[in-house]
Length: 285
Image (tube, rainbow, N blue to C red; front, side, top):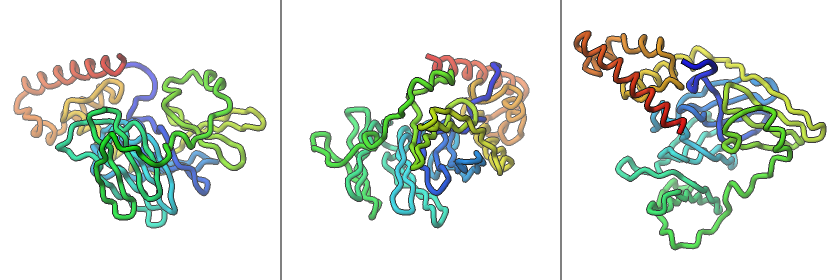
């Protein structure tokens, strides 16, 4: 097993909303909603997003805020999720049915009360969501869409060269947001760190993320790992072998995976380890 923080231990995101001193985001490496106090790094796990697999990666890509609601736009997920800041509640709007073929969302366009999800795959139809009625309809590719891409509303980070100092990967897969006080923030994909760049002084600060409800997140991640083992999708990048063996020994997991004897257990362990190595190799490619 390689050293360093595993993927299921990381707290990071592609995009986030900063409001009233806090950041809200969908976790990059598994299904989870987080809230971070910007100045202190105090972090709270708020739960998983409805109707998505708990172990799913890259569920959301971009976010936007309207009134007292934060909208998490799908990337590889099947739903547009809404978090109500007043009621502290989550809601999901299905944009890709389970019976549909898989597609990833390439662009999000906003036009008044409508959101357009434009799939990357050309054979998939564009999805139009009415935010008031929450009704989803399909739009033909030939239609000239009205609206503005979320990505075009972003300001360019003014010190791109400073990112090289961090020696981090995925630099083009996370976004910066600029505050009114000319501070820029982003979440590093490796580990649990918030970046703060001061535009006027050209200083770059790293703020550790400190969980305030770690026990709750640990219990949730145990369920995530159990699902990975059951479905034989665990990888060495996500879970240590000792954790894998501990979960596999659980009687419920054994029954659900038809492990009725020691030979079956040994066979499943070997097959799952081989599959984990194969999955890891594919992700590296």
